[in-house]
Every structure is written in structure tokens, then in C-alpha cells.
Length: 154
Image 1 (tube, rainbow, N blue to C red):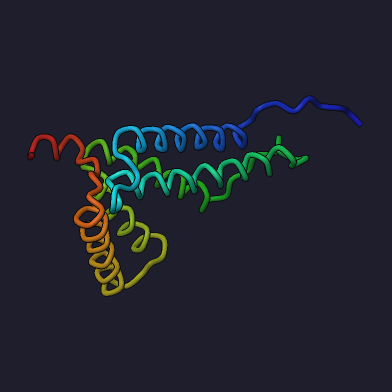
Image 2: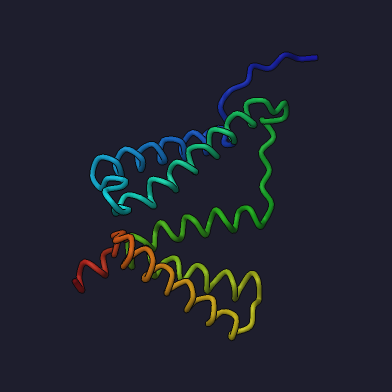
């Protein structure tokens, strides 16, 4: 048996990156937007999501560190599609804003991957738009990025 020294690979880099991202969102949310002042502040929901991301990233990192076969990194087609979708949302957020990017992602996923009928797609899109705009924008006053196009319009 050969004793290999374990190093960092792609499987450990991703959880470490998401740990850093979550910490940035927690600190920025608490410092710039607050968490709770008699009611939820604009930082409330992003901080909660960042805490969940932090916990799951730490758990993922620990699981990978314990894995004996962590040098073997293999992704199947569905995993790569989710990664590409996330990258697409991030890129489109800079161009057209977060809300349209997420709605386009949901539309493309339902139509191309799930092959859902038009009626289901339209119903889901309307519900998601109502939740995003009603709950997060109106009630929790979360300011979503509007992208370059939104900056030009507004």
C-alpha cells in the first residue's frame, strides 16, 4: 500500500469557497442591513440563507475530509447542469438582474430538463414571481441586484 499525502482538490475547494461566500454575506448583512429591529430588516433573509450555507458547507467539507476516495472527482451530467445553471444565474444577474435571472432559470429548467407542460410552467412562474416580489421585495424589503440593464432603465 502506498501512503499518499492528501491535498486539496476540487471537492475541497468548492466547500471552502462557499464557506467564504457565506461569511461575507453574514458580515455584510449584519454590518450594512441589520437582522431584526422590531421586524425583519433587509438583511434578515440573506443572513439566514448564509447561515444555512455556512452550516452545510462545513458539513460538506468535514465529509470530504473523512472520505478515503476524495481524489476521485467525477460528476455526472445532472450535476454539471446544476453547476452551469448556477454560473448562468450569476452571469445573468450582472446583466439583467437577479429576479429575471432566477425566473429564466426556472423556465429553462422546467421546459428543457423536466419537460413540463406550458400550463405548469406558467403557473409556477406566476407563483414564484408573486413570492419573490410580494414577500421578499415588498414585505422584507430585500433589494435584489438589477444588473446593467436595470441600471440603464432606472
